[in-house]
Image (cartoon, rainbow, N blue to C red):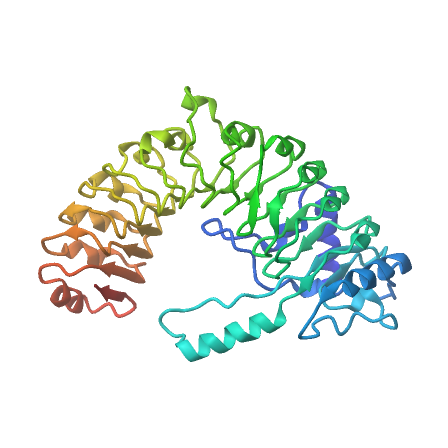
Length: 420
């Protein structure tokens, strides 16, 4: 199938209510999109499709205000059709600019294979490649733009432009890790076609989240590291988004949050991913509304300040595939009901105050790929039922009685054992 035909199908799906992102969906566990745009990033056709002249001028004006130290946009010149420019996707029949893939690629460190020198070189390459400067309002001339990704660049010290809220065709907007500061403009609530909004890991804040009511189609929302402390009704406002499937609010200063008096009033019927790490929650009762979200696949509550046993109501979330409760002050034994989560693939209970032994029931976690129990106060022997976990690729354990000898005896070498 030609790339031209693939893009035509994708665009038709968008017009039918499905964003082109259906062709490179994120992992349901981590929500990361493929770091590289698909093969149709520059549109080609069996007949000549030319960029719309005023849209080409708009892109050249946009480029003029960008700082591009590694000359990534060398192809963006007036004598080359803009549908052939790097990062530009045009419609293969009309020639309208539909997508701009202009993210930079922060290196991901593999702790087992990447040494300091290698990673340092990758980091320098990244730093030389990022865009900075200003966002030119000429983007408003791209009347058919459905996708804009500027993530992992450096627009440090400027606010998110209010005019972005006037690009009404947008279905996907990613401004994460871009160095934007200040108030999130309420004008973004005008983007009624938006399915995906990622403003995570900038220096932003809000006074309220009422502007979200203008985004009825939103499926993915990431406001991680934005200060939401003034938005006391953040949960009630987000609860009004009927199609929301992924919600990421890590490090949002939610510690003073007052939970709803009736937890059942929170009905995220479509929600599959919820990340609330690093919010300094102290009491798990604040999160009773979470334990009613039976469709959750991924739950991250790490780096809070829970002083309690592992919440018993978690046993209601039997669809979980990813559970991270690490870096809290959980102070119980590991309950047997947790070992009954047959779909669980990633379990992180590291760096708590968990005590007691590891039950032989751990052998029931037949789907598990990674287990992290480092930094706890577990004792006794590792149960032999661990050998039943055929999918296990990584396990992290603190020193326990006979643990080294037993792990060697398993002789299942695809395991990665880390003994603290």
